[in-house]
Image (cartoon, rainbow, N blue to C red; front, side):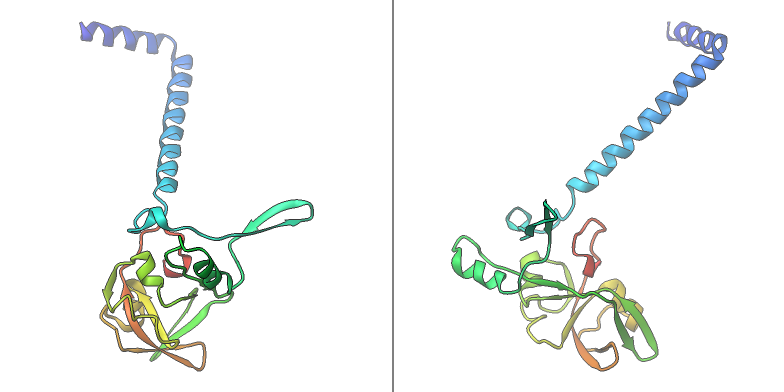
Length: 195
Protein backbone atom coordinates (compact mmCIF):
# COMPACT_ATOMS: atom_id res chain seq x y z
CA UNK A 1 0.00 0.00 0.00
CA UNK A 2 2.79 2.45 0.93
CA UNK A 3 4.56 1.40 -2.26
CA UNK A 4 1.57 2.62 -4.30
CA UNK A 5 1.43 5.93 -2.44
CA UNK A 6 5.16 6.42 -3.05
CA UNK A 7 4.75 5.69 -6.82
CA UNK A 8 1.83 8.13 -7.08
CA UNK A 9 3.84 10.82 -5.27
CA UNK A 10 6.82 10.34 -7.61
CA UNK A 11 4.59 10.51 -10.71
CA UNK A 12 3.04 13.73 -9.43
CA UNK A 13 6.46 15.25 -8.76
CA UNK A 14 7.77 14.26 -12.19
CA UNK A 15 4.64 15.49 -13.96
CA UNK A 16 4.79 18.97 -12.34
CA UNK A 17 8.55 19.49 -11.93
CA UNK A 18 8.43 23.27 -11.73
CA UNK A 19 5.69 23.52 -9.09
CA UNK A 20 7.10 20.56 -7.19
CA UNK A 21 10.55 22.15 -6.98
CA UNK A 22 9.04 25.47 -5.80
CA UNK A 23 7.08 23.64 -3.07
CA UNK A 24 10.10 21.58 -1.95
CA UNK A 25 12.39 24.63 -1.86
CA UNK A 26 9.75 26.63 0.05
CA UNK A 27 9.24 23.79 2.54
CA UNK A 28 13.02 23.46 3.01
CA UNK A 29 13.49 27.20 3.61
CA UNK A 30 10.53 27.30 6.00
CA UNK A 31 11.72 24.32 8.04
CA UNK A 32 15.32 25.62 8.18
CA UNK A 33 14.08 29.05 9.30
CA UNK A 34 11.87 27.53 12.00
CA UNK A 35 14.75 25.40 13.31
CA UNK A 36 17.12 28.40 13.39
CA UNK A 37 14.53 30.54 15.20
CA UNK A 38 13.92 27.78 17.75
CA UNK A 39 17.68 27.40 18.35
CA UNK A 40 18.02 31.17 18.81
CA UNK A 41 15.09 31.23 21.29
CA UNK A 42 16.60 28.30 23.21
CA UNK A 43 19.94 30.13 23.44
CA UNK A 44 18.26 33.34 24.64
CA UNK A 45 16.17 31.48 27.24
CA UNK A 46 19.24 29.69 28.60
CA UNK A 47 21.24 32.93 28.98
CA UNK A 48 22.86 33.04 32.45
CA UNK A 49 20.78 30.07 33.66
CA UNK A 50 23.80 28.07 34.87
CA UNK A 51 24.19 30.12 38.08
CA UNK A 52 22.97 28.37 41.24
CA UNK A 53 20.97 31.40 42.44
CA UNK A 54 19.77 32.52 39.02
CA UNK A 55 16.19 33.03 40.27
CA UNK A 56 17.44 35.49 42.91
CA UNK A 57 19.91 37.53 40.84
CA UNK A 58 18.81 40.87 39.41
CA UNK A 59 20.59 43.62 37.55
CA UNK A 60 20.06 47.29 38.39
CA UNK A 61 19.72 49.62 35.43
CA UNK A 62 19.66 53.38 35.17
CA UNK A 63 17.05 55.18 33.12
CA UNK A 64 16.32 58.74 32.09
CA UNK A 65 14.62 60.80 29.41
CA UNK A 66 17.10 61.60 26.66
CA UNK A 67 15.79 63.86 23.89
CA UNK A 68 12.22 63.04 24.87
CA UNK A 69 12.74 59.25 24.78
CA UNK A 70 13.07 56.98 27.80
CA UNK A 71 16.49 55.31 27.70
CA UNK A 72 17.99 52.65 29.97
CA UNK A 73 21.59 51.57 30.46
CA UNK A 74 23.39 49.17 32.76
CA UNK A 75 25.59 51.65 34.62
CA UNK A 76 24.55 53.00 38.01
CA UNK A 77 26.32 55.21 40.58
CA UNK A 78 28.85 53.29 42.72
CA UNK A 79 27.18 54.13 46.07
CA UNK A 80 23.89 52.59 44.89
CA UNK A 81 24.97 49.01 45.73
CA UNK A 82 25.78 49.52 49.43
CA UNK A 83 22.76 51.83 49.80
CA UNK A 84 20.37 49.21 48.41
CA UNK A 85 21.81 46.55 50.70
CA UNK A 86 21.49 48.85 53.74
CA UNK A 87 18.01 50.26 53.01
CA UNK A 88 16.24 47.15 51.69
CA UNK A 89 16.37 44.19 54.09
CA UNK A 90 15.05 41.79 51.44
CA UNK A 91 18.27 42.27 49.43
CA UNK A 92 20.66 39.50 50.47
CA UNK A 93 23.80 40.80 48.81
CA UNK A 94 25.04 43.27 46.22
CA UNK A 95 27.92 43.06 43.76
CA UNK A 96 29.21 45.95 41.71
CA UNK A 97 31.02 45.50 38.40
CA UNK A 98 32.96 48.18 36.63
CA UNK A 99 33.73 47.58 33.01
CA UNK A 100 37.10 48.97 31.96
CA UNK A 101 36.69 51.13 28.85
CA UNK A 102 39.96 50.12 27.19
CA UNK A 103 41.71 46.77 26.98
CA UNK A 104 44.28 45.71 29.56
CA UNK A 105 47.75 44.73 28.43
CA UNK A 106 48.64 41.57 30.38
CA UNK A 107 52.31 40.61 30.42
CA UNK A 108 53.95 37.45 31.72
CA UNK A 109 57.60 37.10 30.74
CA UNK A 110 57.74 37.74 27.00
CA UNK A 111 54.03 37.02 26.40
CA UNK A 112 51.72 40.01 25.91
CA UNK A 113 47.94 39.93 25.50
CA UNK A 114 45.52 42.83 25.12
CA UNK A 115 42.24 41.78 26.73
CA UNK A 116 38.99 43.16 28.06
CA UNK A 117 38.41 42.97 31.82
CA UNK A 118 36.20 44.11 34.67
CA UNK A 119 36.65 45.23 38.25
CA UNK A 120 34.40 43.46 40.78
CA UNK A 121 33.56 43.50 44.47
CA UNK A 122 35.14 40.81 46.64
CA UNK A 123 31.93 38.75 46.87
CA UNK A 124 31.52 38.45 43.10
CA UNK A 125 32.64 34.81 42.86
CA UNK A 126 30.47 33.73 45.78
CA UNK A 127 27.33 35.47 44.58
CA UNK A 128 27.50 34.08 41.06
CA UNK A 129 28.74 30.63 42.19
CA UNK A 130 31.26 30.59 39.38
CA UNK A 131 33.10 27.27 38.99
CA UNK A 132 36.74 27.53 40.09
CA UNK A 133 39.57 25.21 39.14
CA UNK A 134 41.70 26.58 41.94
CA UNK A 135 41.45 29.27 44.61
CA UNK A 136 38.91 30.17 47.28
CA UNK A 137 35.84 32.12 46.07
CA UNK A 138 35.43 33.86 49.45
CA UNK A 139 38.99 35.27 49.55
CA UNK A 140 40.02 35.44 45.88
CA UNK A 141 39.11 39.11 45.43
CA UNK A 142 39.80 40.45 48.95
CA UNK A 143 43.05 42.15 47.97
CA UNK A 144 43.01 45.04 45.49
CA UNK A 145 46.08 43.49 43.85
CA UNK A 146 44.31 40.16 43.13
CA UNK A 147 43.29 38.95 39.71
CA UNK A 148 41.12 36.01 38.67
CA UNK A 149 41.88 34.41 35.31
CA UNK A 150 39.85 32.03 33.19
CA UNK A 151 41.25 28.59 32.45
CA UNK A 152 41.87 29.55 28.81
CA UNK A 153 43.70 32.76 29.73
CA UNK A 154 45.84 30.99 32.34
CA UNK A 155 46.99 28.52 29.69
CA UNK A 156 47.70 31.35 27.21
CA UNK A 157 49.76 33.30 29.73
CA UNK A 158 51.50 30.57 31.72
CA UNK A 159 51.07 27.38 29.68
CA UNK A 160 49.29 25.64 32.58
CA UNK A 161 46.03 25.82 34.55
CA UNK A 162 47.25 25.88 38.16
CA UNK A 163 48.70 29.40 38.38
CA UNK A 164 47.47 30.60 41.79
CA UNK A 165 50.23 32.72 43.33
CA UNK A 166 51.80 33.67 39.98
CA UNK A 167 52.25 37.34 39.07
CA UNK A 168 50.82 39.17 36.06
CA UNK A 169 51.85 42.67 35.01
CA UNK A 170 48.94 44.77 33.82
CA UNK A 171 49.59 47.66 31.48
CA UNK A 172 53.10 48.92 32.18
CA UNK A 173 53.46 49.13 35.93
CA UNK A 174 50.87 47.31 38.07
CA UNK A 175 51.56 43.77 39.26
CA UNK A 176 48.68 41.50 40.26
CA UNK A 177 48.75 38.10 41.96
CA UNK A 178 46.56 35.37 40.53
CA UNK A 179 44.21 34.36 43.35
CA UNK A 180 41.89 31.99 41.47
CA UNK A 181 41.36 30.31 38.11
CA UNK A 182 37.83 30.04 36.71
CA UNK A 183 36.62 27.19 34.56
CA UNK A 184 35.78 28.51 31.11
CA UNK A 185 32.21 29.76 31.08
CA UNK A 186 29.60 28.92 28.45
CA UNK A 187 29.11 31.33 25.57
CA UNK A 188 25.66 32.38 26.81
CA UNK A 189 26.86 34.43 29.78
CA UNK A 190 26.42 38.16 30.13
CA UNK A 191 29.67 38.61 32.08
CA UNK A 192 31.58 39.73 29.02
CA UNK A 193 34.73 40.39 31.01
CA UNK A 194 35.12 36.74 31.98
CA UNK A 195 34.28 34.91 28.79
